[in-house]
Amino acid sequence: MPRRKAARKRFGAASDIAPERVAAILSRLDRKYPKARCALHHRNAWDLLVATILSAQCTDARVNLVTPELFHRFPTPAAMAAAALPELESLVHTTGFFRNKAKNIRGAAQRIVDEFGGNVPASMETLLTLPGVARKTANVVLGSWFGVAAGVVVDTHVLRISRRLGLTSNTAPEKVEQDLIRILPQERWIDYSHQIIRLGREICIARKPRCADCQLEDLCHSGDKTWRSS
Ligand code: SF4
Image (tube, rainbow, N blue to C red):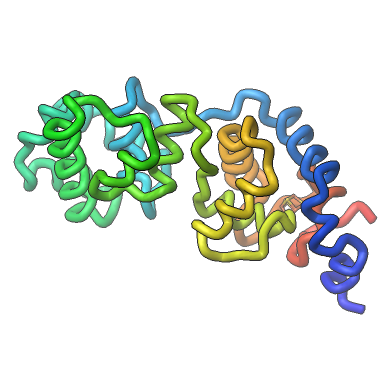
């Protein structure tokens, strides 16, 4: 029997998401990454919102190279709302999709000034009304700045690793998030993403996961493991 099938037979989908297995995964993540935090540099909710919009299809490291000058030039939503689009585009050029990103950042700034008194709103419902803001961006701002667990950040790492761990079989980020919301205790929604993103960058990389170095190896029965303890 192929390895993957054998593994599925051993664990099955129901036992993949059994509370005790999920608790074991969370406990290992806590031990390995007790202080995992958002890697995007920011000083306030506005900075974080902008950095998160810029991080679409771009690395956090690249965004962190761009934001110091951007935040210096336009430190508040009011300043950004008055920005000239060509200057903004030039500042965010290296993050990719720069025209859309510049337009969305300025549009979000405008709406925050017009509708929310210049303050980034602190609820999912209102954040989703800002240009360029979908659930992932809203979850980052709510979780990492406001400490509100309204959902689970599902980026490329969280999606890939949650699937490898058998916590979801979905591929659409919205559906993966709904699965994680059902499976994880709410007090873990924020930390889970931070920890899994670290694991994804350092160990459970997309092409060739470093399973021999992974704290979760004996709990993981992904079909594309590169090493098995048993
Ligand atoms: S054992 Fe391998 S595939 Fe599973 S989570 Fe760890 S690195 Fe990823």
